[in-house]
Image 1 (tube, rainbow, N blue to C red):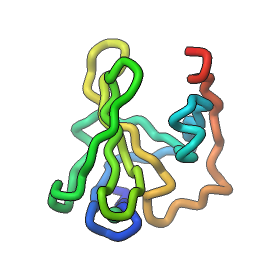
Image 2 (cartoon, rainbow, N blue to C red):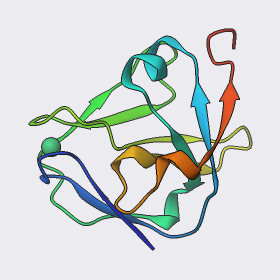
Image 3 (cartoon, rainbow, N blue to C red):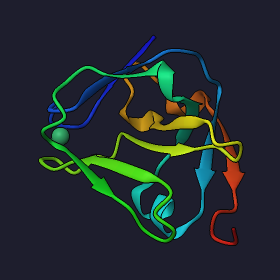
Image 4 (tube, rainbow, N blue to C red):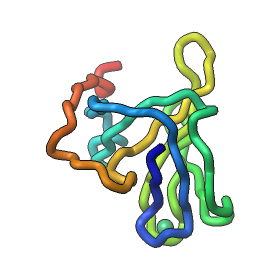
Length: 114
Ligand SMILES: [Zn+2]
């Protein structure tokens, strides 16, 4: 179980599972925010705070709901569906506690061309 939060702490969450690789996407959105993503089934994600500060950002085809804190601006996770229609959460591992970013394998994803 991994605990995560935005910077100010208004948003807190937990994610079940383990990971050693993260997706580093080069699209205009991910590159600007520096997102390092771990994809999990939506049911493995649990919000542990109120949703009052949970703002939403959508762009392009509006298929992914990028959530961010309306107070501190951190972008800890996003919701969407995989190609088979299964509900997924994309966790920004930079917002998880106790993650050593230097040990993670970064898998490039060419979202810029997709
Ligand atoms: Zn915040």
